[in-house]
Image 1: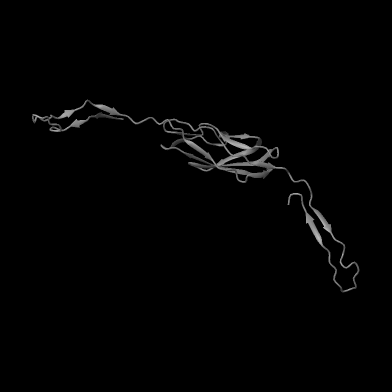
Image 2 (image 1 turned 135 degrees about the horizontal axis):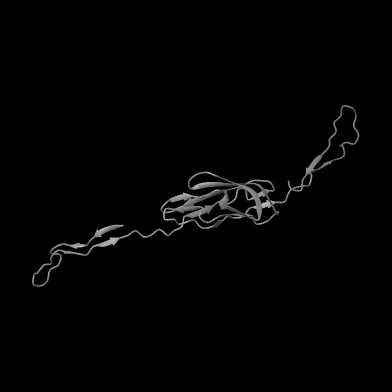
Length: 178
C-alpha cells in the first residue's frame, strides 16, 4: 500500500464573476491499497492419451497450472491424483507449471468410466489461494482379446498335378479384433 496520497488543486483554478481566483487546495491524505488476491490458481487436465487402453496398459495426462499472480507453492505429486473406476500405478514427472501424470498397469472393468481427479491445493499462489479439485475426461479399458486368430487353407488348385507343375493354395487369416 502507498500512504500520503493527496489531491492538490492549483491556485487560480477557479474564478468567480467578480474576478476572485481560488487559492491552492490540498486534500487530506488517503491510502491506496491493492485489491486482495482471492483468485484460485487454475488447473487444466488434458484428454487421456490414448483414449482406449487394454488392461495392464498405460495412459498419460498433461496437467497445466496457471495463476495471474504466479504460483508460489507446488504440492503436486502422485498423492494428489485420485483414481475413479480403476486401479493403476501413478507417476508424476515434470517441473514448474506443466506436469505429466502416467498411469501404468491399469486394471478395471471393460468399458467403464475411468477418470482421474487432481485434489484441491495441488498448487497455491503467494496469497495462499489453493487450486480447486479438477476431474479429467474419461478413458476406456478395452475388453481383453482372448480369441486366437483362425487360419483357413483352401483345397489345392488343381487337385492333381504332374511333377514340375504348379499348384495353388489360398490361405486366409481372421481375428475377432483385427
